[in-house]
Length: 201
Image (cartoon, rainbow, N blue to C red; front, side, top):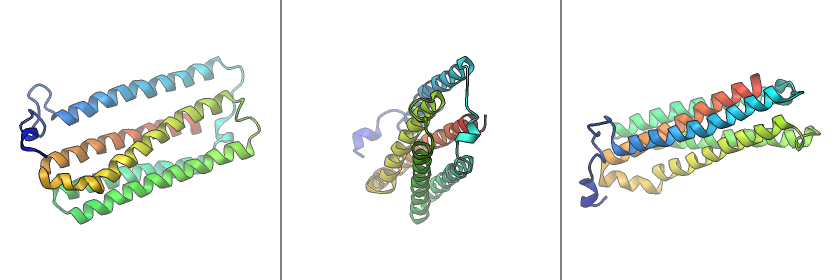
């Protein structure tokens, strides 16, 4: 990081008005917009279900065990991310890399299991193209999967080619990893709501 960048206000230190450094303030604003995005989709789900004359028993259509396993997978990845961030703050780069690689690995496991579910829907059900429930299911889980992919890309950068940024400004890099962690925890939280709504209700 250049010396000029280091003098940008609140790039590392918290702002006086919010108590947050710039990147953390920015990610909270971004996550607020994400809450509105997914909130609108959950609202659409409720309206479609209430306004529908018939609605399938979701647990009969969904693979609840795979969904439950995926919930454990994502929650575990959040724990790994916290461990990685703590290791980074302690300058234990080897442990940081180990836990970040586990985060990425578990993200791929999640996507693989989700792919299995998608395959089952299209190969074993006769109405994936005409079911209102499956339409909203694919929309919501597909958008969530795109968020997972985005998280994989960011996390891969911070544990790979972007790691050199730590040598230029250690606290700046720690803050950026913390911001990526907040995004990752949000994505995991969204999945808990998706699993509860689309599998168990």
